[in-house]
Amino acid sequence: MKPVSVTQRKTAQEIDAEAAEWAARVDRAPLTRDEEEEFRRWTDADPRRLGAFGRVRAIWLATEKAKALGPDFEALLPTAGGESGTSRRRVVGIGLAAAASTALVSVAGFKLLSRGPRYVTGKGEARVIALGDSSVITLNTQSELDVGFTDQERRVRLLRGEALFDVAKNPARPFIVEAGGTAIRVVGTSFTVQHLDAASVQVLVREGTVEVSMPGSSPAQAVRAVANTRTRTIQGQSVITATAVDPSEVQRELAWQNGRLAFEGQSLSEAVAQFARYSDTRIIIADPSLGREEIAGLFRATDPVGFAQTVAASLRARVEIGENEVRLTR
Image (cartoon, rainbow, N blue to C red; front, side, top):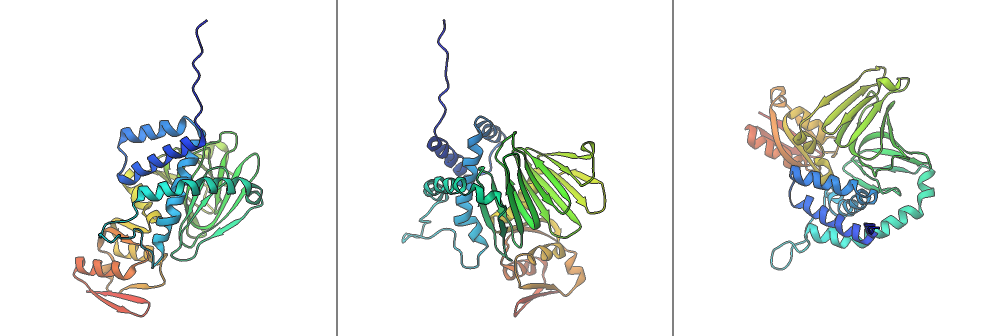
């Protein structure tokens, strides 16, 4: 009889180390198409891997990216020689022990999660939530959600705002997000849900597949949206629209994870509306024709003054800075 080949199951520590390496690779530069396929194969091979990657990412976000929304935060501390004393790779490495501790706390507090805790962010704040199932939620500015887990399903209710969901795979326990009368059902994937007003809900899928449905609709009316797809639903209407978007647009719309806002061809008025979500300093466009100008660039979400100054220089406009307001004129 031929000997049976047995693949040794990796330990949690080994998976954490691999997750840190992947996090470092993603941080260095965007993954190539081949690397993306390699990453998908790596996560698909063991259900623990996506959770480990999510925990490492949560630690990184909690220590750097989420704090980037704060006015006094400096992501990298300079050394005496003038170089960055703490690299992002080192932050990931330092976070491994903390990640393991976070996982234990999450598992120990699972019954608390099941009772439905509520998470809230104020204007200009972001929060990273590592759940007991190894999923990670990144809650954007002025957002609020409830978490309620049972043995049969994982359910989250987004009451307002915007959140990114990195869901750990578990076919036996689906992950369901409810927002404004819309339900998004997944097993394991990455997507955002935006619920900024009472009428509409937008879902943007970054990875995997989600199923979007509305109350009273039949299973046949549900829309399955794959990666790089945006769906929109409107309260009182039974139609769910789905539109393919370019991957670069997905990346731009997720820039808020890094405390940034990215624009490519949006009008100045649209950009100003985005900044209003992150800061109490108002940007006033005195000239309507100026508001119709298209802009492009990457800007810090909580720096409306810097944004206005940059825009004024590129559009040959004037900027007047007052108390809690910035005025743009021709």
